[in-house]
Image 1 (tube, rainbow, N blue to C red):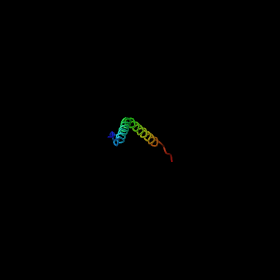
Image 2: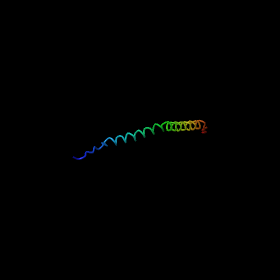
Image 3: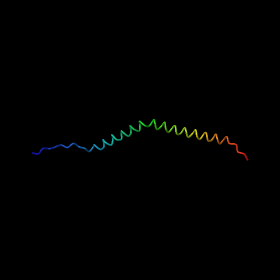
Image 4: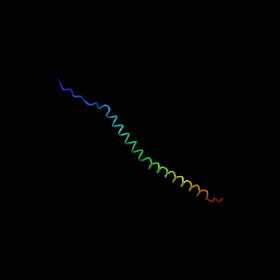
Length: 65
């Protein structure tokens, strides 16, 4: 009588690995989201201020004919 060795199934292992990787990626995105949001808002505000300054400068020009 031979000895039967029961092999553990590894079919679900890659799925678990992908889930762990996905969880790490989602966690990283959630951690950096406030910083990215603040930086984008600052860039938008700077662009708006420069546009406003340029419009004011153009409005103050005296065009002589």
